[in-house]
Amino acid sequence: MIKLLAIIDAISIWTGKASSWLILIVVVFVIYEILMRYLFHLPTLWVSESMVFGCGVSYVLGSAWALQDNRHVKIDLIYGRLTPRQRATIDSITFPFFVLYLGVFFWASANYAWRSILVRETAGSAWDPPIYPIKMALVVGVALLLLQGMAKFVRDLHLAIKGRKL
Image (cartoon, rainbow, N blue to C red; front, side, top):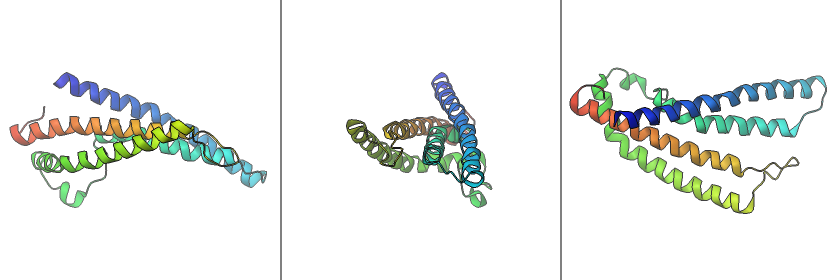
């Protein structure tokens, strides 16, 4: 079990770090767009759309790493005052809601992506890049987040019941 959890963690970390490099590309695009727009008065559509796509892909593929590294937003006013065992208990109790939400999200995004792949959907702008790869990244990101959530649940349940980390 510990080895499986370590593999899930490794996948989340690797995917998150790999997708984080997209942010550097986005930063370069932002600088390029600012120079083109304000210095040369020649805004570019492809750079604007690429920035949105890059940020979106980085966000969805990095979400599992954020969960693995305990970086998701919580209500720290209450949550921060609890003991680790109490936090694990609350997280274990709320896990079915997490699964329900992400299960529906996965199902909807998979259908959304599949329809997009079938028609080879594009952005519809003047540049008109394909957007089905972005939609596929959403499905992968949700699946990775769900997988990491399950690993967290196993650890939280063990801590809540046994009083020590797995």
